Length: 93
Image (tube, rainbow, N blue to C red; front, side, top):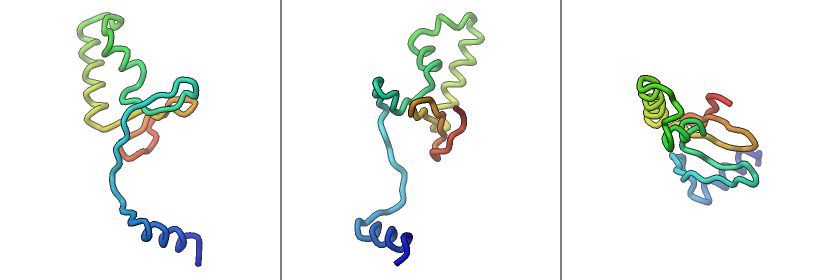
């Protein structure tokens, strides 16, 4: 039996089906590992938007956050930040 056939047989035995998963945000600071809903700078903005100087820029930042969320993006932290899309593909580092 080939490795693929073995893998397929094991998945069938377990009742594995393809589907979307959900993972809640978490962060293990000592290992710089986790999943964040937003990049650090956008999260910082939500907590205190005053560092963005003008109302117009703050509106743009909020639009960036809204777009990020609508697209289902997230940040995977694994010794560095990987910006990921809803399909789990890296869109920026």
